[in-house]
Image 1 (cartoon, rainbow, N blue to C red):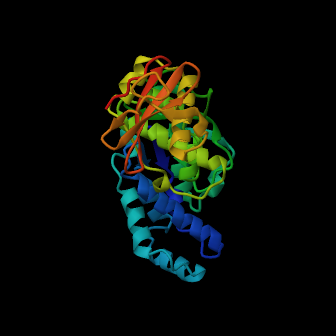
Image 2 (image 1 turned 60 degrees about the vertical axis):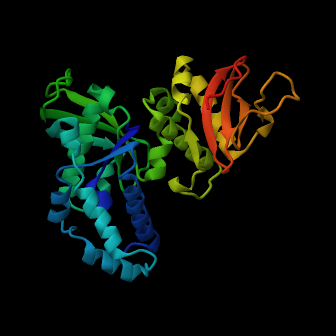
Image 3 (image 1 turned 180 degrees about the vertical axis):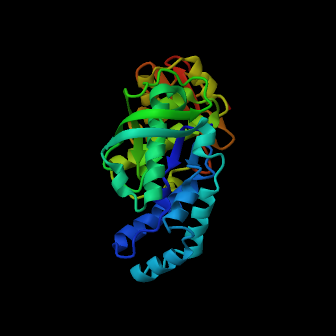
Length: 346
């Protein structure tokens, strides 16, 4: 499953100018390595324009090993390896399918294109500008006319001053093979739309709805993704420095998703479910948590599964979260139940 799809602008891969700051250089390397960690994640699909390599090459920005060596030397970067960064860029450029192939939309001919804010200023070459302009319009068209496929698709830029870019242009011709792309304004009418943009992994996750991911989950990976996104975003509130791989370990019980979906939760309830799970994993607001016992009495023995202990946490007055506090210190999210249900799947 994919909770998110993104297209990385080719300009993101271009080595910063040698006269830039050390902070710019470090941010560039860290951004590249961040995306490398996500290429094998099941919840995000990363795409590149089919013209990305050509645009970088024609603007004299690829291959980039020599440029990286000069950048690392100029800025005194020793904690990263040139070959590692170059290999990540090469792998990104070789990703298949391309953005155009995946969305079945190839090219567009426009006139009087305007973008707000003007992200074209981020490009360091004519070929990169041309490719970015083409991708921005294509993504805007998809979001406006094919929202079921691209409503939450994000464009990754080197820098993003806002979450969206407004697009306005006259479209002469659109080359595509989709069956659902109808109602496009006919020249000289103007097309208007917008594109979701961000500049790094943090920006991508901030733009995701963990509740929507949970409600759309088709498997346990989807549920796990929703929880991890909720955990990540909860830490952003406190400005904590951490990585995606630094989130606490947990597991999703085999019955959690079907039992939750049988309740037909609303988005508001999904938000409360995720908050309860995050607080459980972070061990906060523990007053809402108590042992799940074998009987109704407060003195009845706690339910156990070998060395794992059954726990019950309030979601609200009507619903509760049941989970296993495992002997190895991790948590297994077992079920979401109504008030008078004290069962827990083993």
